Length: 366
Image (cartoon, rainbow, N blue to C red; front, side, top):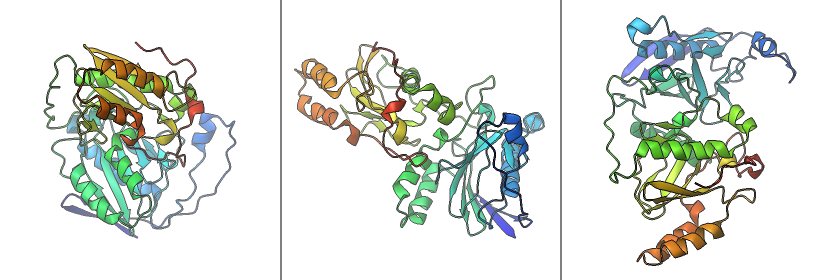
């Protein structure tokens, strides 16, 4: 069998051996980490693809992206059909991934995968699209010198997925691809691309965009139970290059100002009202933030009965605050239909907010 890998304009032919048979052993829930790691992965369900060989190709791509003098020290490799020092996340089926030493990712025709190194300085993101035994690779998406940029990828996928009933959800995940991964900090926090993106300053000097995102991300993370945190959000990025990772934010005062993907960047303005939540529907607990003289007033988890606050609390507060604002009625109307201002996608086959997963001790409003 042969695979063709497109990396921008470069075409590389790989000769791949036919996948061999692997005995499937049921592992009990109580098995230790060592026991689970010792069990081999079952044969890849789609016979077009050999798990070990695809992972080796991914590792090779990532190693070439690592500075030459550091390649041996931070080498990505494959062990027992599992990624080591890098992750693979299926954006078509989020339950399918290799983000730990016990995961066995399946490679399926027409699925879309995000892969990158786990160490943040070398965590350059790639998207692989599997097509008829071949792979199309879009490279260095999170680096300004990347030739397989996100805009080109989205154009390609809009056409490829035009008849797919799950197109909108898949596209939403691709637009927020950095959410789907696991990362380790190494000295420098940022990814060390050859060229760094020049980030425009937030127009309102009362607010530093990155610091606001840090605070919003901390609020979201604090809302979910520990079980969910460490099962579905392990070592997740929260903010990168002054963009939120894994959540959207919509300005309800000026709705053209928003971040719903990694190709957008929002501005923070005094006295504006914002809606923010995770994009993953089971944990998409809605919050309303109001910027006031350099501080944030936040109403939390208002779409859940178990949340600390209610929509009526927000409306009553804003009716008084906006009593002299000429746009008062338009803003209040948007706030009343806040869930219309956001993007959402199912996660692990769950498509409604799991309000039972709200942390019972949500920190109070500041």
